[in-house]
Length: 109
Image 1 (cartoon, rainbow, N blue to C red):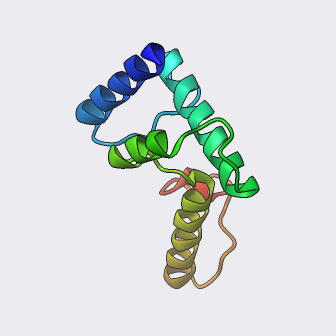
Image 2: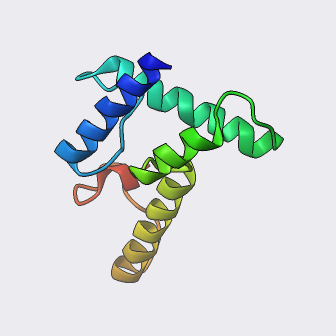
């Protein structure tokens, strides 16, 4: 559809400008682009869990993969945080990260 192709072109431009396809659903610079990426991820996730072709085509998945849209961002984020915690534990000897850990606030509780 024409609108999806326009949003895809917007996403390609965003990748060229920012170097990756990490567009949050609350992307203030282009809210419709954030909504599109979120919708595509939801449809893709539903396809993976139900083994169906509901909502997103294989062609659309290939297009998104080609420009680097992360399909499992929660899993990737969890893996990154886990590795950060492992590094913290090696450096400090424990995994009790303070809530206001200045070096990595997202790692704190």
